[in-house]
Image 1 (tube, rainbow, N blue to C red):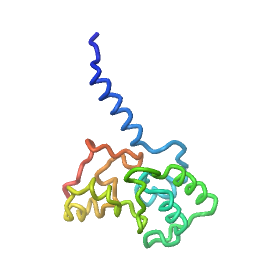
Image 2: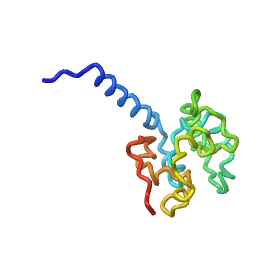
Image 3: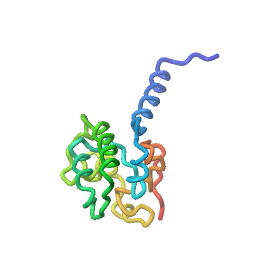
Length: 152
């Protein structure tokens, strides 16, 4: 049996650690999938800070141009989970004045190689359509190696 080098072990641990971080946090309410992800990507809570999630869940009647109102019990369940798992430090904790993930500086930096024409492709439509290029976005996984930008 071959020995694993110290470097290999560090790399393996780093991969495990980064994949764990990439996944959705535990305890995701089923209602988040049925209510929110029925219309758009199930955005990972870590992409916005607590205030942004509170702003979004408090204004579902005007949710980015759509009435996405839900009953009070479901709203409370989703809101608590989002706020509990929101970004609290680092680039993701930056406040977004329009409550959009796509307006944040880290998002723009991560996607700076995507041209304006690519965003407008029928299969992509907009920067908020994470699933177009990140097949595992609904699971909170945005592994750079698995990104596939559609040709059309």
